[in-house]
Amino acid sequence: MPDRDEPAAGLADRLDRLFRTMHPAGRGEYSYEEVATAIRNEGVPISHTYIWQLRKGLRDNPTKRHLEGLAKFFGVRPSYFLDEDTSAVDSQLELLAAMRDQDVHKVALRTAGLSPAGLKAIMGMIEHARAIEGLPPSAEGEE
Image (cartoon, rainbow, N blue to C red; front, side):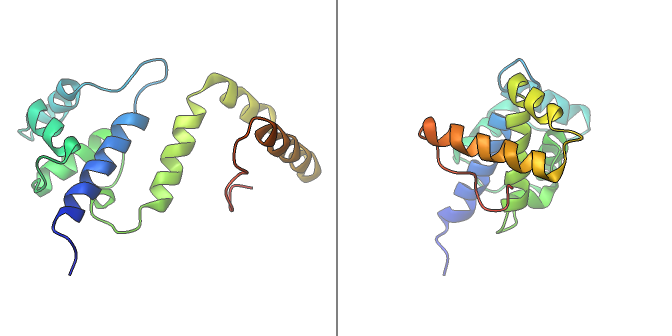
């Protein structure tokens, strides 16, 4: 039988990840009040304190409307908060966070139009640079 704390931790972790990654370039996280105001503007009553409690794992039983409001605000499906496997969405969130870095964005744009051989050469250089920096190799499936 699963631990009763697991869903709350999963929800809190997922909401925290959205706060950390889903914000406009050039600024930090949305405030709890910004999120609550936007969700209330969609007709869903919610407070900034309640959102904070959900993110910190202090509350763990949001209504369907709250999950839908949070999902809509952050641009994910409501099922993101409930599904066991969120690896696909998490990978997309990581990509969005990386693309917010202007230098990463520029590198990605400069690879457009390169041949498969050219892309392979660039990937080799990136892996070499990661090794020099002491970073792990790219994960399987990123290539």
